[in-house]
Image (cartoon, rainbow, N blue to C red; front, side):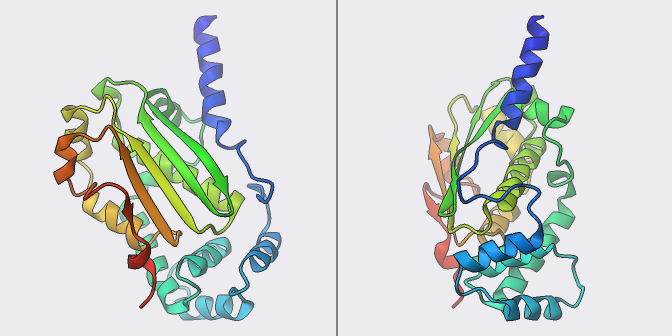
Length: 239
């Protein structure tokens, strides 16, 4: 009975971020036309002509979802050429890291394992921006599967895109309490440099801030951190 209750609680935790929404949110099933009308109202600089131009210039090179076109135009300050660069970089990373993006089922065994071992929650989500918090739940290193954690993280991002549309900024708070050297070595198995570049130049926010809690001294020299409270606004804004 206790095990069954535990499983139900896990499913509720997994689904909790899908129930968090702002009064101006869409739903996961909102069609493109409704989404487009909502984004045109929110962003006066967005227009049909630049959407058409971006699709024409891509010329079928990559299969981009219509909603994503709007998101990348917003993130690039409505600069079509810059939006195309960001889209290509984004899809190139997705293609080379498919295991980060290939699970979209929050109740799959893989994702349930993540939520059993990692606390990830949406502290706020509205048209102004998002705040996502992450912390280890189970301190045993054998349960720390970094690729699965990133897959869950990107699934959260995709859901927020569908339900919030384009936002100005995103804040990611990473709590390293109980994070050990062994966890760190597992983290080194991924290419943190490419991941950092992906977050800097090809993700759909104008401004990104990464902050740390209980930061280990070792992390001060890691490429993932660089320094606390990183802001990438200037790197994303076109010259």
